[in-house]
Amino acid sequence: MGERTAAFVGMAIGLALVACAGEGTLVLQVRSDLIPGTELASVETVITTREGVEVGRFEVGAAERRSWGVGARVAETSLAAGRYRATVSVRDASGAVTLERRVAWETRSGELAVVTILLTRDCLDVVCPGAADAPELTSCVAGRCAEDGCTEETPDACGPPACSTNADCAPAPSASCASRECTPSGACVDVLDHEVCASTEVCSLASGCGPAESSPLSAPGAGHAHVVALDGGYRTFRVELVAGAAPQDLSAALDPHAASVAPVQDTLAGLSTNGEWLSLAARRGGCTEGCVLLAPVRDLTRWEVLPEHRPALVGFTAVTNAGDAIVYIGEGDVLLRVDRGAGGWASTAARLDEGSGHLVASDPSLTLDQSRVLFLCGDDTTEPNRGAGVCEVPLAGGAVTERLAAGSQGADVFLAGPREQPDGTILFEWRDPSGTPAGLRKILSDGSVVPAAGSLADVTSACVLPDGRVVARVENVRLGVFDASGSELLALPVDFGPATFDWYVDGCGL
Image (cartoon, rainbow, N blue to C red; front, top):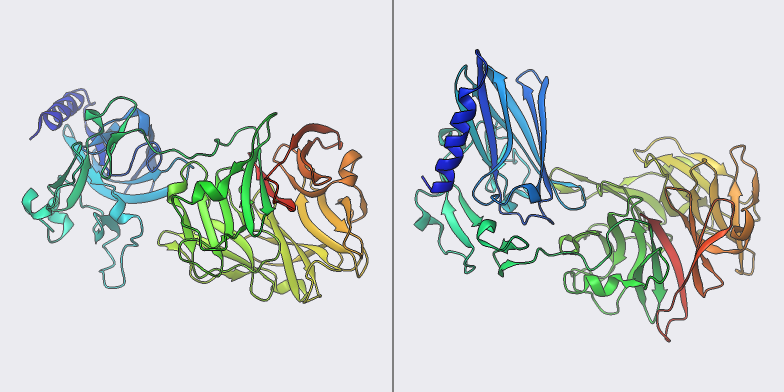
């Protein structure tokens, strides 16, 4: 037993001595090879009785523990004697749950229960039980499925071991702060010892001690807009809505992680309302036709391409605040939703617009409460935005409501970008039959349409922030931020270089 483990157990025994009569003490710890700060931002533990009654909830931030590689305490409490379960969830820097595991144990009166579980990267894409597994193998342990009772203290519940000594787990990592170990449960794991690094550094297998990787993009905060620039192709930028902010080249920021396929096509950009998730239609990650791409703003190294999902070049993409659902327009101009489950992204998307009674859909956006999807609905199969109306459907699917009748603004008028405002009204852009932008209009609660307030009647390509501010293109020379009355609060000159001939706002969030 190493010095750290001995000291930890000694402290835990001390806790057991102060437990009330008839109670036992639980000390739950996690071992993980995920990188603190980006991949592992926090760990939440929910303890329940065998019958499902919650008896404790704990959350530990990555910065609060440096010993994730060798065992970090995430919960300690006194419990009445009995059988218990815990659900332990790892959240990354965006707040998304990336790993989750259930564990079961028994607490005995006057005794200490030390429960150590592995939450390692080889379980990131594993669903338990697998197709060939027994139904009781519901937890992923080091890449394989095991019973919930499998812990480092109860190896007999873990199934046949993959190793018996550290030599079985060769080769060792080259980083001096890392090693490879056979754990008591018979699993080979990479041990990242962050405590041997400087206080501002973490250990990685590839580079040893060094700064935690971070995104080149500014963190969610005062608000951001997505802008797609047409520059002999499509590149997407993220603009912080503060005076003097320079556009952040999202395409360039993705290049080191998700290689692009020439010609560059990063378009149909979406930004979740909370500013944490980016969605694109992109030729990246080996996808030459343009697939849905998702990346957390705070850690672009965790980008994902969904190769089965190929958006039509119509409208936008929209992504939920949890990063677990993306809405896009698919082949045939139909409205689709794809979901992320415990086993990853679904290979088949759910169609949402079938009940609209119209032939085509385009320009989806989520309502501010994330429960519904607004989209253009119409019948022109060559120009989906021509003569369109505005429809609404629950994100979960169901009945479609026509908020603005197709053709009501004119059979040859182009509509674009329906966006909900906090008061429930809907902004949309319209263009006259020649295609000339003619500003924003607003759908009121009674279904009537009026010009948008103030200067918003003259801008184009708009989106709405959760606090009601509107971000829009002004005369193709600047990005304007407006309040609900249409008064301009902030003007940001937008310069994407001399070759750029056009650009448009494709979403905004915090």
